[in-house]
Length: 183
Image (tube, rainbow, N blue to C red; front, side, top):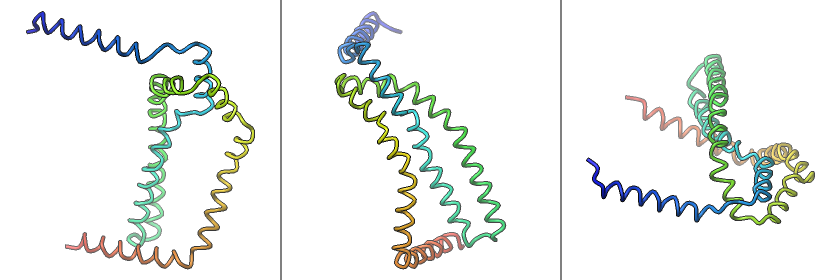
């Protein structure tokens, strides 16, 4: 049973919370809010959820590949990997709209206030200039090529040293796995 004191305490706490929230979140002038909105549009933070999912999904596929290597006949391994990759792609297709929807819901109450609070209008204008820069776009377009080129170069340069060590690691892991599953 709620007593009048309990009701008054809850109302008081609610009022205090509302006053505190109002004091912390000062209204953003429309011109500044327009700049914040433009930064958010150019930045696309709603892709963060998808990016967060990609790493564990890729890890799961890689672990499956490693588990099947040497344990299944090549045709069974390849068929299983095709199924696993298909499942991973389907998972990403199903999960991406969920994470994007969550990000779209949370951005106005999380990221937008941070930008409005920590950047002046002049800084937001500068940030927009950076995000719209043709040089930035050109650089970002080159990133996959640069990553591929560097990755291939590092692989070629270190192959003689790394491949035997990697093979040794795989053998050690295989021995540990076999020991763990052998009765």
